[in-house]
Amino acid sequence: MSSSGSNTQQQPKPIELDKIYQWINELCMPSTRENALLELSRQRESVQDLAPMLWHSFGSIAALLQEVISVYPAINPPTLTAHQSNRVCNSLALLQCVASHPETRSLFLQAHIPIFLYPFLHTTLSKTRPFEYLRLTSLGVIGALVKTDEQDVITFLLSTEIIPLCLKIMEQGSELSKTVATFILQKILTDDTGLAYICQTYERFSHVAKVLGLMVINLSKEPSSRLLKHVVRCYLRLSDNSRAKEALKSCLPDQLRDATFAECLKDDASTKKWLTQLIKNLEPFNQINPGQNMGIGANPMQLQPAISPSTNVLSQFTDQTFNMIK
Image 1 (cartoon, rainbow, N blue to C red):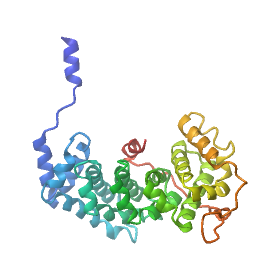
Image 2 (tube, rainbow, N blue to C red):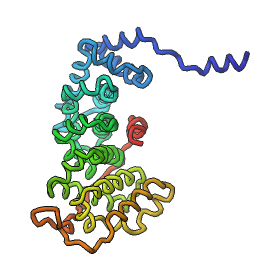
Image 3 (tube, helix red, strand yellow):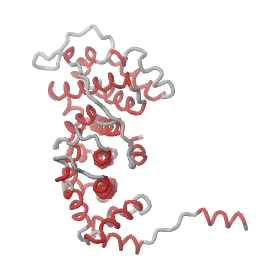
Image 4 (cartoon, helix red, strand yellow):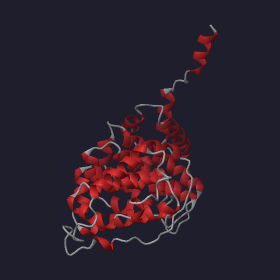
């Protein structure tokens, strides 16, 4: 009896759908919206069909977008408060729920909703905690899209400015934001269309190579195995393209060839395997003509990064975001 009673006590409390419906209805009323956002964001992982419930209910998505747009004036000049940031991040968390659900993902893209988040990704010069929450949660929405490995997602993102935005964050963001932005780039590269797009011109490839090289230099000073894993996987995928492979033979950072990251990767068998495969793909290093097949006299030896600042900011959304990119 005691065992049965103990098991009963450990069962999670069932979600009252009537309460969920009430909070969804309250999204449309400014006076009750803030509490509804908070409660729904708390329940987003417990209610399996919350995304279609939000999408198909009158005014809910419009209310979430209204929350997003309402903080645009606080971007420049940067006056975003912690309260504003927390409120809009609750809205973004619900949008991520919609982006993740197979029934609503394509509708989410067709409505071009990710575009509404891009202004938040432009805020890399604002290093305060409210802005970092905003960037990280916005990246989480894009990360939820690319994690599905769907062609429609990559096609949509390539038609927008997501790659330059990710590269900017990879160069200037906090470690947390850098990791999610690099994961997004990695997933774009994993798709054949994304790889071909980035390697189509020397300018695109060189921009990616310079930022990745900068990150390797910074990681040699401040190691992060989680971030390094995604950087290595980006390089490895680039080496699948013949033109990029020839350029990488000359511009791959020395820190990835020597034992710089041996200690950082000692317990990470997967990343060590990827790094070994990358080095193998690029052998021999010196039997090429620099710039071969990269077009317009390009010289991969010129792909040297410049030093850029980085920050470390913790976020209340960290656990969920990194569970997504594991």
